[in-house]
Amino acid sequence: MPIGVLNCKIGMGKTFDIGLERLTGGSEFSIGSAINTVHRGGSRNEGSAAHAGARTEASGLEAIRGALRGTFFLETFGCQMNDHDSEKVAGVLLSRGYTQVESPDSASLILYNTCSIREKAAQKVFSRLGEFGLTENTGRIIGVLGCVAQQEGEEIFKRAPWVSLVCGSASYSKLPELLAQVEAGNQRVTGLDTDTDETFETEITRRDNPWRAYLTIIEGCDKACSYCVVPYTRGPERSRASDSILREVRQLADLGYSEVQLLGQTVNSYKDPTPRKMRFSELLLAVADAAGIRRVRFTTSHPSDFTEDIVDAIDLQPKLCNHVHLPVQSGSTRVLRAMQRTYSREEYLQKIRMIRGAKRAISITTDIIVGFPGETQEDLAETLSLLDAVKYDNMFSFKYSPRPHTPSLAMSDLISEEEKSRRLALLQEKQREIQTARHLTMVGENFELLVSGKSRRENQWSGHTSCHRVINFSSQEQALLGKYVQVQVTGATPNSLLGEQAL
Ligand code: 5AD
Ligand code: SF4
Image (cartoon, rainbow, N blue to C red; front, side, top):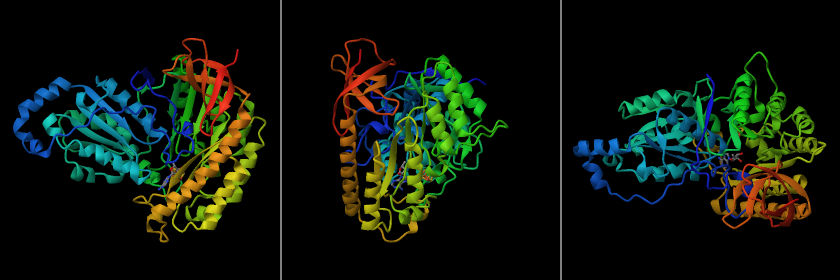
């Protein structure tokens, strides 16, 4: 069955890009979040007394349901994988005749696609759900999708009895049938299996960004990092067939997408399940070969599976973006061992040397966790010195957050929140210095940008380089969105680059 693609303008007014444009500011970063998150307006403050009377008002309820029938509101938390899952969920709903709306108040079906990578993210959904104690009274159906759904399972029904659908990310391939059960009036529908070997492919995907398309090529994770809940919430690694990926890429190109971003928790661990047995680097080259595709990105790479043929492919094919996101997590081999990261500091640095040895300059970004149980001042000093050694183009840094179902939950030598904050600030200050110096060297350089944002200010635009930097630039030209333009960098701050369109 061919995979259809539908564009939808909801959320289009925002900056499209995610994560990497948010540099080392003062707070924690989570990757992703902006792209198709539909932000809700106004708060809802109805009290629980009305909830008690809900069952006696069935006919009123039916009337409200009838008025709102067929509309859905979908809010997404977390990473690009979640953003893209939401695009697919929206596709499934649109194919069932639903219309997407921008506020839960005007929706008959309200879905939260949740993230549980850190505690703060997981808490968000319960605060959202807390606002819906009146659901029965308002006649809406509420569903919780994604990692919190997988993690908490049927507990969600206990904490928020007004929820009627709980579906974990590992069970999305069953989503159409689960939705059919919800539509049929079933009050407690769950999809919580993790033993599926299927990936989530849909006939229609509603993509938010009209120029860049996300494409999941591998789902789940077979690594076992001791702090990480993903293997539990997303299940084991499943790679998508290369022919199916390439077919979708060609369709995307025909529809006018010029940039594709291949996604996976460990994207470079891709193992083609077909007899063709394409290597990840071969897949990258084949995707870049599709007529109309100008840029190919991939994220997130695991250092242990980052092999030289990937660097060779980037060198060979300019359409492959010169950017690698290679999370290190810690600069201390001792902590890496405790994290079960499968490489040492030295082995990681060896991968960096390999990437730096490429003919093209490849930008490198990373994720780092501070305050892992037992992390000493010496361990932290090693992480700081790793920043000096690598000189990352960008960094996402997090305070360690204990997660359910993870081995590190049982570890002792916990670091206080205050100390974690202190370490995070030190790390971010160092990265800020590195980035400031790097940005200054870029003044005067020319870059090709894919224009993806228009400022409210006259003649001001923004776009991305192949190396995944955002440049805000001025141009006298009109209608630049989606176009590729040459821009000269004219100014720099630690967190942003300014430029002018080069003539
Ligand atoms: N605590 C803090 N950060 C975490 N990450 C994953 N699990 C945790 C956790 N328990 C970070 C890692 C990962 C990024 C997506 O989130 O750095 O690369
Ligand atoms: Fe989590 Fe480690 Fe898998 Fe990344 S590689 S998703 S950090 S278990």
